[in-house]
Image 1 (cartoon, rainbow, N blue to C red):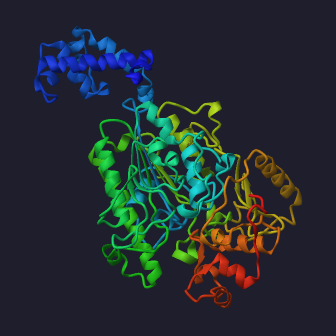
Image 2 (image 1 turned 45 degrees about the vertical axis):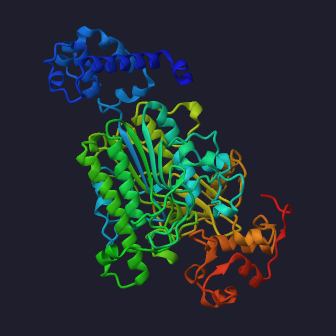
Image 3 (image 1 turned 90 degrees about the vertical axis):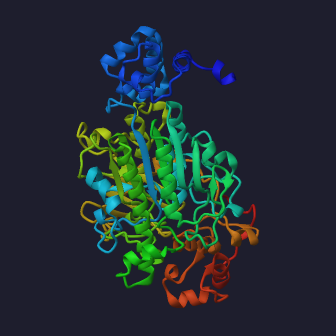
Length: 588
């Protein structure tokens, strides 16, 4: 009852109109399938309008409207709908109901790992169809080269460092108490829900473990997935805390990527009669490398075992995307659905074979290979088909683009860092959406201004400078030749950095907890250097180094002190003679 009395006048009009509709149906005694009312032959005009109302205002013809108008319910209900914030987007360019929104996020998918991006050995026809029917960005970026911070930026439209979300948390059992997307930073779901959207999330969350930070409390009506950063795929394997809502789910029999496709389809079918927002962040193709036999058979021409497993995982994700796209088509929703597809960071090539060619670097690095990703968008009838957009865009742009699409453009006091891409994609605006983009991931720093990129990686003492228009592989460092450009870009980066918060947590895991130590800041001693280098090499963020991640066989044998085939941070510290300072003796 309290909710009713707190309704605005516009909301009360909607409620009154809906009550009149309900009363009409009760008086009539007919079900919603009443053919006489739907055809306009019913003489009970209130009843006739009730059926038209259930049909949907956007489909009511002038003849139907006039036939039903005698009951007087028309003016009340239509005024209520027009005044309600629920139909802000009825003024959207579709001329119908507001567009559905689907955001599909791959995990650790390399820049070169789709057919539309040039991949030759893995078929991805369904994801490629988004590029054919929409726009492919050749310079699509994310704000961080690892999982969780990118997701925080994507969901809020703001650089994650503005609210201290600098890095991954580590396993839930060891995560810092401060870890989570701050409650004063609204998610896209929290922005769309008041506009009448059904909101659902299927997949990997990774932006909060505590109840107040989980999807059901961050704007999502429905949630099926897991909260942590990684998950097994096979039904027979050990699984993390997979949930429906906040209830643990047991007995799953499908390959995890298939299950996510199934749940995404179910959400669309359940909510097809109203505008919806589906956030579908797969954990594919993140490690562990696990594939179902049915998918492995489709890539049996690939000789390398690791590559074959990775390929099968990619095929499974493409199939799941295909199920979503096919459901939208079958339900007649495709042309009124704005779809985004992108990856959360670059591929960890040594670990999974996920290629970033022709870019330099991998996941966890701020060279192009860590931050430039496959990035596609489709909105049939609104955006051009088969367009290639060659200017820089970033995951920050999704929130303001969606808000514009639904008729609720971002305001200045939203303080978003992204921009609405629609006018650039429809050629209403020329030029670049962004003059400058920035990155900060602990000691790793980068700025892109025009075609110039200034970058500092791997504990380097000085900046490197590249012209990406001429050197996309970042192989020709121009810093010594152009010191003035270096100073100009460094000043711009420092000015941006001054606006940011310090990290609210560091990544924690069993080794750091067992030693009762916090890690020294980068550059404050041997322990800090080992920690920094360990994190750089740990491309999948699991807290252990494989042979491929270390890369040097002799060094790997030295570090792997217990001979189990993996290197922990504690082993690396012991092997290299590094020490930690006691807890409380270092700054976060």
